Image (cartoon, rainbow, N blue to C red; front, top):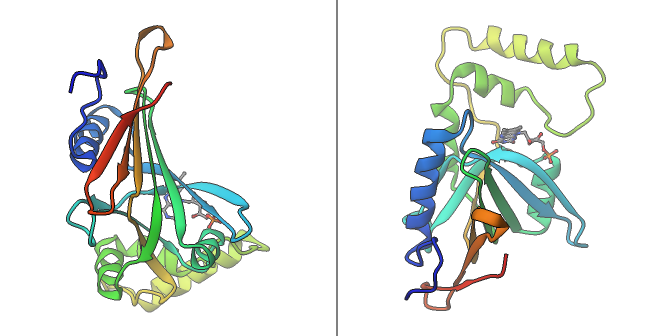
Length: 206
Ligand SMILES: Cc1cc2nc3c(=O)[nH]c(=O)nc-3n(C[C@H](O)[C@H](O)[C@H](O)COP(=O)(O)O)c2cc1C
């Protein structure tokens, strides 16, 4: 297929891997940072950054992108009420964008435990002490909670994962790659998953 695009039309997971690898080599920090858009069941959207922690074709039934968070946060409440989301990567150093959309599934307890316990103790404590997204009358309250957990788990490598701290896997139905081209004649290729688990793709006007 010669459609004059510089974006290959093969497997989108493979293409993501190539672009992500290039982003890791060129971004000054957090190449795995992505905007996560969720919405209420009434369709009111909200968006924030999270970190991509695992991804690939071999995750779940059809491949997935996993992030971790507090399931009782604002995003957590929206996700539990409406299990669909969109992800956005913008790698400024490469002038590239990737958009990913699809349903979400909560990861298994074993997977959430494994990731939670892979983090440094201070990160485990920081997230366990945080009632993420709820009002904090005084920052000291949070710091006191952190200090109390530090004292309780001194000398340990891990603390119990709070049950509401969890991960979600987005199973992509649509992945779009956007590439900056000269004279703003940009290049876009969109992959849409087919019923049989394969991918159709089409170029989009920029
Ligand atoms: C670069 C970056 C990465 C972040 N990664 C995460 C993350 O992986 N998980 C998370 O819960 N919050 C992460 N945050 C904080 C979120 O953006 C957000 O403030 C928090 O999750 C609360 O969002 P909510 O109130 O919409 O639930 C990150 C923020 C930035 C700027």
